Length: 593
Image 1 (spheres, one colour):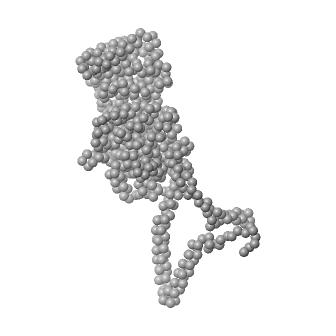
Image 2 (image 1 turned 90 degrees about the horizontal axis):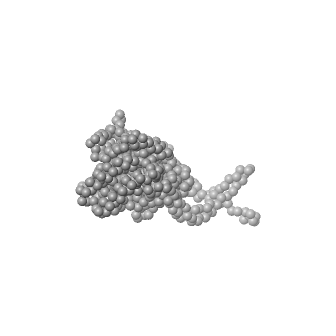
Image 3 (image 1 turned 180 degrees about the horizontal axis):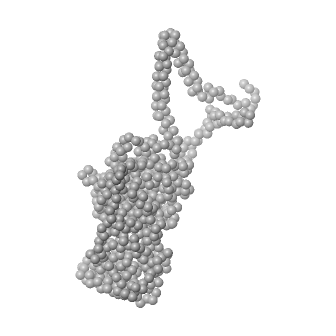
């Protein structure tokens, strides 16, 4: 042994890698066997070659089989997110149909090719999709929607279609036209309803003031809540003024729109006429309680007496400006109708498909207000159904799917409250946006409510630090084994290199299941998901998004036909007009913004 105190034992190649010795022994044994076969058993050379080739084939087969069982799984996991898609080309339809029978949809396929099923009982706990432009969010939404179009839910003797509301905040109709072939293929083209102010000839009629019951004050709160009047000094006065007008028009028994509200607000003669009509009708209506009559008289007195206030118009100018934006030529065609109106309850009960496309870059103020009204109407309907005993006891009620793509510009403060009650009505919300900071335009509390409530969170490629941090922390930390390998340093003529030694140490430390360098390097169509499972808790998966099959027919494109318009002469609406002709000729209201 060397007496040098700086001497360190370095193992030989055989000691460092005993596999080399095993291979050398096997090759030596085979060489001896070949010699015996040739010179002792007189086996021909071509037979030896053939036997060698067969032996190599068997050896490679055994090696690949052992590798698949022992190391292939880890290799596929380590190659994420640079792994190639593992979506099966055969039997994919049978996989999806089996998922439908289990009341689930297939979101995609894991790194090992296993389908990831998203059951309806998890969907009703709401979901959130995050990812930058071009990451594949539209493909994911199209995959979910197309499966909902095709499948039916419920027992065999009572099957139901899935009612849907698809809210597209981009408003370019590209997403709508990409879904048309699938809607036609599913036989649900007659169920489709489009709401797009830019295409009034194809849009359904939606009047925010139309109420299906006597709860007209909920409509007032819905309309006023969509206006940006919360911070105005006379906001409470304007809300009460609008409520008084709506109460009087409600008891006239006729439907009304924004134009009718403005005529009531500006013309004293119209107010007196409508008050008289409402009083006459209430006398013959025994269902109106004494308290309601007193409330009506108070509203009528406030409206008539307000014309004695010299500052009446300045106090309600903000309200008038907001209502005036709905007199846009295209938008008023959609929101100004009295008949053939579509409601959210009708979408649910008749199992329809409502596609809402709003382009906020065109006519920003009224389009944003209309989007907020639709969301508040949706919240109102879900809230009513949640507290309804009939709805609670209703058996076999189908899933109500609500997909909201880029909805952040239309959000409002208390919209997140709907997430707490939606599950009781079997309503599944799916929110899609580019990043979490988009919700800050409503408020920090709104962002926290929306991001903390969903039971399923799906993240696609993003470079936003806050979004990546949110998903990483939501994935939670798990203990992992970390190995430290010792290395030999060698230096020859200034060239430094390191060799592994036989010594190593392991330690346990906590690490997030979702890794930062994975999140920010996801390719298009790849995502990581956190899904709540009633048995296993929160599941974390890495998926290749399943793209829906191309079912377009060559030389054929389904289209929507223009809607038939109802003549106002035959309608049951208020159709109010100015009594004061000078006022009608001179009135000029400034538009807000």
